[in-house]
Image (cartoon, rainbow, N blue to C red; front, side):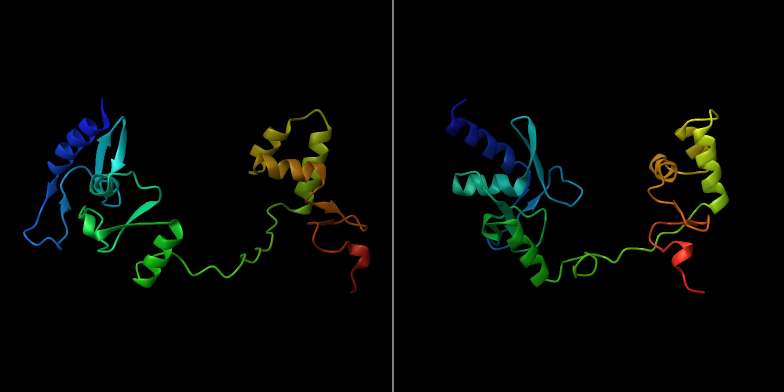
Length: 183
């Protein structure tokens, strides 16, 4: 199909879903299918496309290379006067300026690590290691019996997480062995 015939048929289908107002500066509401965020959707060449992108295509004759953003902050609006092309950073700046940012606290660097919580007692760790060395069971069976994930049981067995201290007690790898501790 020739591009001009394709655009003419697309425009006819597009306009069947749009409700125009008598005021040219008012929002033109999309009455077709919408996504979870309220943006209009239209089926074009085996894909759902956002109606605002198609409005931009029909108004300017070229497919937008970046995002199509709204000055009116009305997701179903398809008025080409309310649309502008911008990058992801432009979109973030726009919503920050207008107070529409619903995220968590602003990023202030990496979160502090949570302290490791030991789920197993020293006796359980020693029992897991002894049972694994014997012919009793596989690592997966041990993980199920002690309510561990497979990776946690592997760390217990390979002594990467729970290490045996000098005095025979276990440490979690972050604290010093018992012989180095002061009373």
